[in-house]
Length: 59
Image: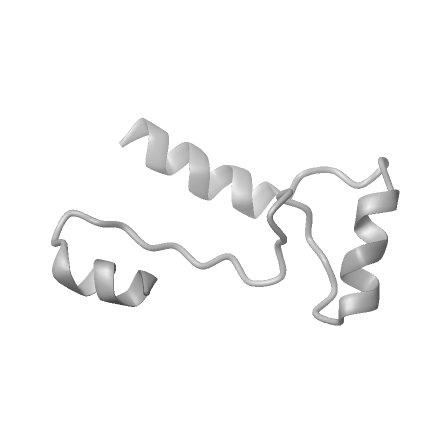
């Protein structure tokens, strides 16, 4: 669905950040490792995700 919108609208920007979940933490690609990130408050937000989001906001 996202690809359809991306292809129709010329002003849409799509950035895929592999290895980052919806709470912006870098996670292993396996489900067990991903779920473990929710219980670890020591994990920082992904700097890659922050860079992409900042770039989008500042453009």
